[in-house]
Length: 393
Image 1 (cartoon, rainbow, N blue to C red):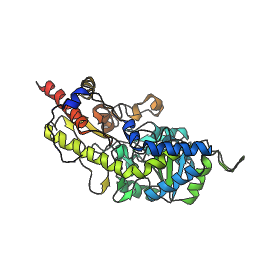
Image 2: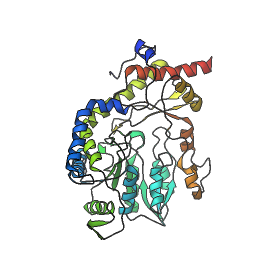
Image 3: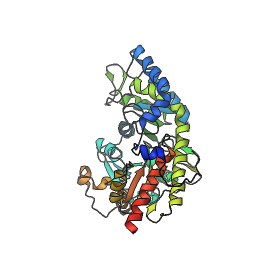
Image 4: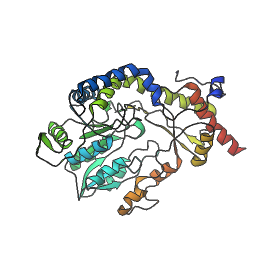
């Protein structure tokens, strides 16, 4: 899987016989660790201890060590991780949280779920992440927190956000659901603000066999509060000091994630090589004016490529064309949050956040998982090239 390889964009006999492949092939990953996973599942089944317990405690310790966090508190999902962080910070009705409109709904949904108001600001055209200057312009006396998203596995530009938060005594809750292992100027994402929120949804770089999430923090008091909140606000059974919720990580999920965690660096490197190979293939194909390929990140950013997302002309027609050719793609995200019906009460109108709206019309995510074969990447790029060649004919 040489990053610089530039094979000719011609079908191979194998490809001709097997044109269909998946956007994300979880079975391919599972085949490489099947024995370890089954042993871990059997261990939990033999113990008959399914909620929290030693498997969860060991996973939390291992992830904390891996990321360099002082505290890691697991929970039932990445969405819950965001909610729990906001609850721990005491954010609720009457408060505002500045965030991105170009992300999964769980980001702003978590803000609404605690009774606060999401305030959407526009994104950077190249990174798809929050514009720091837009964040600064959106601050009001009601602002209590900023929730940057490290979208697609690339860190947001955090230094201006952190300075602003420090000056105004605001919380920073990082949505790092897609970015475990990413870094910003030598610092691990999820450890830059007050809280880092991660998801273990199966499609994530570190994915379980179902839902799961985790919150990192360096504040021991906040960590203790998070542990209470995830078990109905309790330290002792049937004694509840605060109102919490039920958001516990299953031991089975923890055991599977413990198997996968030691492989994460290898899988991340494979994703990075696949991303670079796409750049080389697109460069060789020679139609960069029609498809904007994400450039290699700056040296002080570590991109982990949960998605490899291009911007393209005639996106919807292109997606349908390559689908018929057997090439899987996805759109993350087809409608920005400020224009979603669920947030209509906030009163945003089309045209208010033009970069987010343009991205939603133009983005297309290509397969980028570690087990992706060379011929599959070649078929992706060839199909896209064929589409634009026919448009120009």
